[in-house]
Every structure is written in structure tokens, then in C-alpha cells.
Image (cartoon, rainbow, N blue to C red; front, side):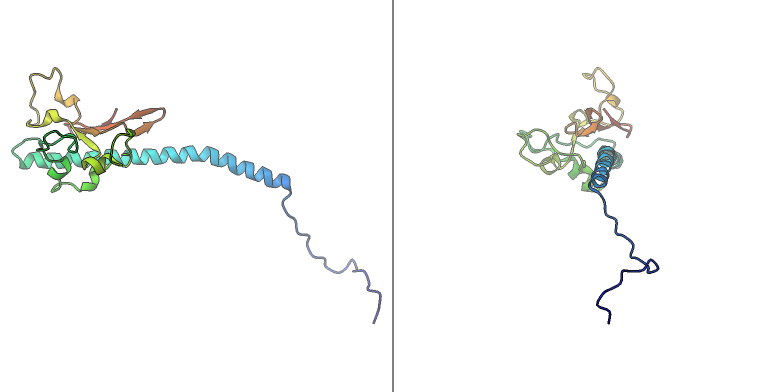
Length: 189
């Protein structure tokens, strides 16, 4: 036995050296990831907002089809509905969702962006409080499609049948609302 160990010869395979990140490399990696997150997060939020707006528009379109079916089955009369059932002085008129329940799912009456900004409103959302995220235009109560009202100086086609209770939808720096018109088109304004 040799009491003096020999130094490894140059012919012996050496283990590969383990290389770790230096502090600077780690900081650069973190800053690149942070920069990418800062760029992508607003894009993702915008896409999500557009998806919710698209869902709201689709809901209004489905409600428009349900109103058309209702009109056909009720001798060409529009539904006679309450605007805000929870605050009506004489709650005799039904909610729009209750009138159209045979023709459309209750789910279509909920806008995904329905989050009231008024802190005095007692319900968490208009859908919970009113049964709908959309406000019915009272002027259409007791009307048939195509009728004109003498005291209205403009065409009823320019008034939305239903619209968001509030301006739920952000469009860049603006806030807007969606509305369903008598010809069944949905428009943002």
C-alpha cells in the first residue's frame, strides 16, 4: 500500500465542472421576464375585456331573437316590462327575463361585466337585483313593431329596446354600453 496518493493523471477523465448562474445573469433573466410580463399582461387583459364584451353582445342578440318570438306569439305586441323591478313604485309589471323565459335562458340576461359602480346600489350586480343586466326601454311598452309615437320627435329605430344598466364596457380610455335595437342589431355606444 502506498501511503502517498498519486495525483490524478492527465489521462483520467475528469468530472465536468458544474456551472451555475452568476448573480448578474440571474438579475438579467429576471428583468427580461419582468419586461415580457409587463408587455403581455395589458394585452391579455384587453383580450379578456373584448371577450366579455363579445359575450354581452351575443347575449343581447339572443334576447332580440327571444323578443321576436314573443312578438309573434302575442299578436305583434312588444313585451310590457318593468324597467327596474326592485324600485318600481307600483310593481305590477313583470321582469323582462320572466316574460321571455320560454324563449331564452335566464343566463343571457347577465352581462359578464355587470359590476355596478354606484356604491349606494344594494345588490352586488344588476342581474341579482333586477333579474337582468339590461334595461328595457319603457317607451316600447304597449307598442307594436313599426308603430310610431306622436310625442317622440325621432324614429323609434334609433332607441335601443334594451341596453346595459350602466356603462360596463371599457373601450380604451372610454367606457361604453351595448344596446339592442328594433332591427335586432346590437351596437356599442
